[in-house]
Structure formats: structure tokens, C-alpha cells
Amino acid sequence: MADDAYAKFRNDNAVPEIRIGIKVFKCIGVSPPQDHPHIYLDMGDDGTIRCPYCATLFRFDPRLGSGEADPPDCLFIDELGE
Figure 1 (tube, helix red, strand yellow):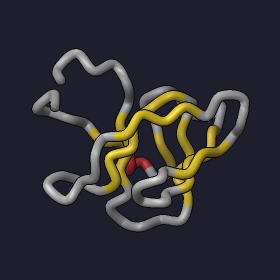
Figure 2 (figure 1 turned 120 degrees about the vertical axis):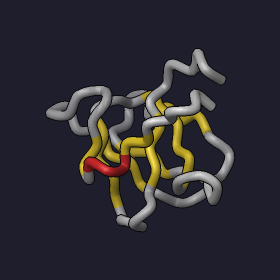
Figure 3 (figure 1 turned 30 degrees about the vertical axis):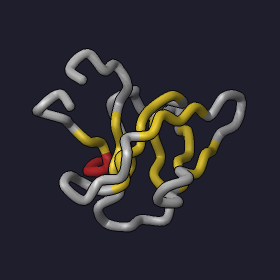
Figure 4 (figure 1 turned 90 degrees about the vertical axis):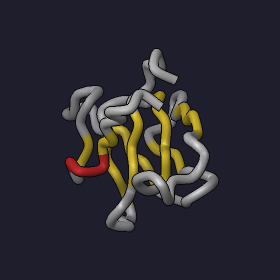
């Protein structure tokens, strides 16, 4: 969907943890076409959340911006708007 406002993150390199600068986002697993359903995740008051599909652990890091991740290549830029 082209108007999707949530940042998307992927884990192509199977890192054990991805640090991100936001608490509400989508996990896609790995890059398409091997991605899993793009699942909405919300950390709420917690500082971590694990994706129920791919088991990637996401950790909130306030030093990062909303469009940043560590490792940096874990941010998924959806050029097709899907």
C-alpha cells in the first residue's frame, strides 16, 4: 500500500538484534521475494520486541532517528510502495 506510514525493517544478514529509533514499525523478515507478511509491531512501554514470524529481536535506541537502524542495512526502503 503506497500510503503506508510505518518504517519497515528487514534482517537479511540474520543478525541477533536490530536497534531502531522508533517503537512502532513493520518487520518484513528478509527482502522480497522471501519476505514474510509485513507485520505491524508496537513496543509500547517496553524497550524490545521480538517478531513472531522471524524471531528477530528489535531494541529501541533513542540515539537513532525514526528512519535509522543498526545495522544500517536493516532499514527497508520500499521503492514500489507495497
